[in-house]
Image (cartoon, rainbow, N blue to C red; front, side, top):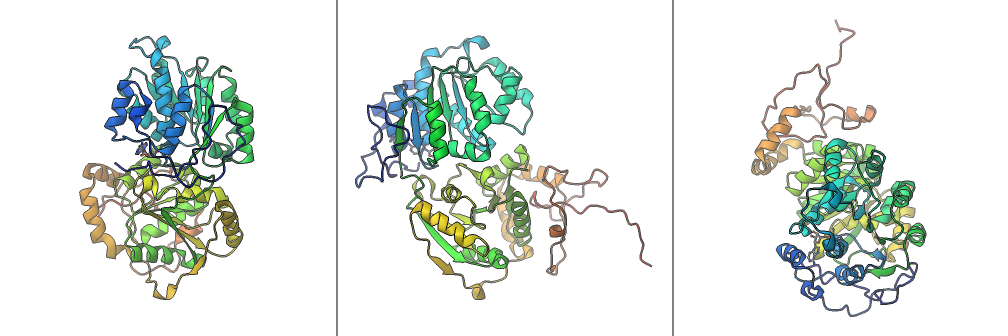
Length: 508
Ligand code: AMP
């Protein structure tokens, strides 16, 4: 188990008198309070047992501050970096409060939705629901998750059976409300998690609609990594005398993450990425880019250069996104190339490095991106490439936000080797894939015939001349029978087979 309990805590905000939601406590005190044991909370045995099974003895700072407040039923406005244990911080006290409603009846009417947890992305919703289920496993309280991108019917069937805790993304929840499969008139607790991100994505109207369906008498918990003026406005409209809790200064970056900024031209960024991975001996990393198109292209280029990559962006189907994450977690994928929306809040342990291949347009995203590494107290590396264009201005925004000078270092591309060619890493990759789940790989291979690339380095990838195609397009045209791979090894889903093109003119 990783010890998260030493993380910084401002601990000043939890007071008996409800604090003004706009009053963000100042920087952390010099001496953080000693970590509190879960045993001090006197949680119900059913919950304490689940916590113990997860291997947690001591609370993280957000847990130590939020759980006692939520247990009293007060509204909370919480600022916590991702990876601080905030899911348990709201889940455990909500489950404890809902235990009075627990029953084993099979009647759906006895299991109305009492707690609603809203999150911005499908992956986050899935992740939080999995955690809620683990904490609730010894109770009769039911949890379900609904998010878009997949069939509504199984979700409807689950909702109709009755669930006490509903974890959802806003759009799909509204679909279920309209279809009358989600009835929210008995909701007692609402959690708006990653609230700043929900606003960034443009979910404010959806949130307002959803909140209008809920009883006025309820407890509302809002968690956000950053407290922008919009977040404060949202809190002002929907929270009542919230207790403000903050475990690290807003927008602070974790001290255990080494941040490096390299001056690299756009053309050299891929070589620079290879160089950092090689010199640091790193196997896995997140690589952030700003656009879906850039994400697909970069994943493809890196794949051609011998790295096993998966692209995670909004145009990927839900199934593809979950598979890519799963493959990354299993170590079958070296690089997860992603956009901000797709990657927000993902809890993947032990990611040694994060690359900002593109500097984020929004400085707050920098904090979120580099929060993917150094999670749960581990050390991490965050490398940002500072190129041309607006990068100097974007970097100045980041410096302003994190209140730290970002020293730009030159990257000596003279010593950078060309990115390794696919062939040179095949053996290593083969060994790793052999260790992975063969059945799943075989299935993947059958679906995605291997594309053969010319041996000589092509001066330009023809992919870049084609319009962008979202990845849920069929892997191969229906008229082209799937060819078995020559090596028997799987390839990335980013690589599509060549299409058969009708020849209109024949050369003589
Ligand atoms: P979260 O911020 O909720 O995404 O949690 C980040 C990670 O910390 C998850 O993998 C949790 O399972 C883990 N975690 C939560 N609470 C604790 C705790 N008290 N001690 C150690 N790890 C924890």
